[in-house]
Length: 111
Length: 111
Image (cartoon, rainbow over all chains, first blue to last red; front, side, top):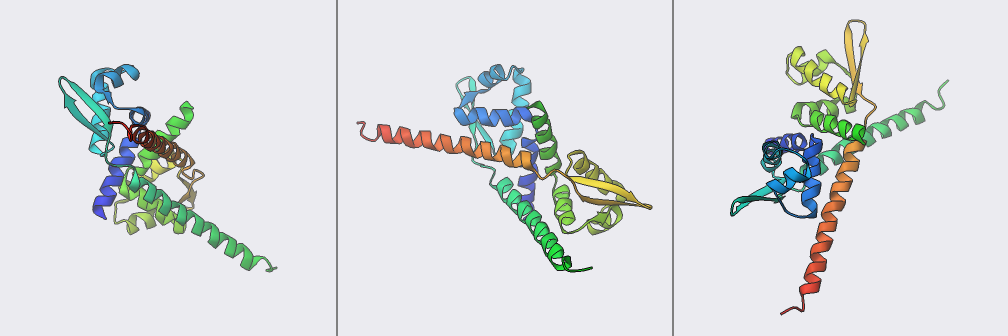
């Protein structure tokens, strides 16, 4: 459970930046080198690298060295934890709504 | 669009902490004062307040002063942006899978 929570912290943190979300979408289309990503996002290589490292730390991206180039692709994690958490949050909201409806139903006939 | 992205940054950021996620779930059950939350989470009032401020900034929690007590409840935002982003990410992953299947299909008969 602690591990699940730590993974969630990391994943939500990685997703809390517009550029990092855009990198994920870009890598969804095809692999790309750090240089290609930096060019595409009009960023310095250093700035881009930091974002990729955060995504890599969260398992959302993996990188490998091919010659002198570092290639990036989507990692093994597919936001399963986030999907699960969102589902439990939605369930909680629905239960709230049910309780509210019950309450309105019960008090309908009241003076 | 920029506003949507900023809201997403803020929401994902707010969700990137275990305690903040737990506060949301707790407030889903019922409203609570800052003091009650601090007690429940065994935190100092100052520490708890910081988390609530982040959640409030993201519109996930609202607070109001009732006498000398600050009451907290779930805010107007219901993670709609996160749900939308998750859906577009899932679509992207599915399209990848489709492309892979197409590729395997096309190369099946190849020598």
